Length: 326
Image 1: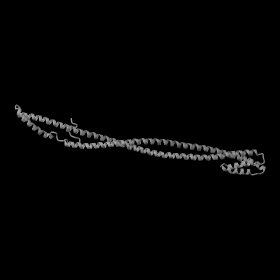
Image 2: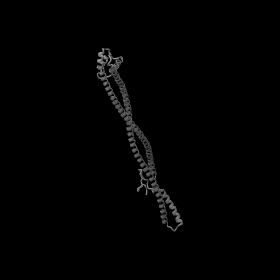
Image 3: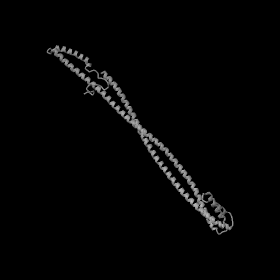
Image 4: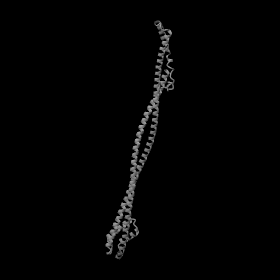
């Protein structure tokens, strides 16, 4: 059975040529001439066979030959037409499959492009935030250092003030039975007065006034009276200095703890952002590689499709031409 179906037509938009028997007219004339010659010879050598019978025999053989040659030519035409149809169908199918693949790859490339852009944008934002965190950490650490240095200076002053008060009280208690305060005692009171001036201790003005009067020389009775007052002032100063030191120590501890927690939180955020940034960079690179591979495959598939399309076009033209020549 012909691949062209019962009507034996090409799928290329052309009709098959006229039936092969029309093309056999010259051959038929030659066969008739041959038949005439054979008939004459037969009449000469075989008188027993009538002329009518001989003609019938020769025409029968001629019909068989013509039919055989027509069938052969028709088979060749069918073979050629089938070849054209099969090739065109195959290329059409290949082109359709290429178009499907190209469409799928185009969609995937666009999807990857969007994902890569989102990842790269996130990487930039993470990088910016990481730099901000580094700055915040440095700023906090610098501020904490300044704060701690101030605390150390204040703590040194208040510690020395307490030590000076203790020394002065010891000297005053030892000299209560004496008529006047020694030069060493006056010097110790002067140190206490200096520490008071540098502090913000409560009762500062009164303490300075008492200490100033105690440093001036006076009557023994007056000194004896003042020594008790001075000792009381020194005791109050010690309580105030001690309370200030305790408050400063607690404030320093709280400030140190708060700063360390803040720096730790910023450092943890920085660590998390850096890990996330690295992950997104790696994922972006992976998707970029996939996108590049797909773009290459798409280019190869497009080239193959164009080659198939060109082949199909050329084949269609060639088959039409051959069909018309047949």
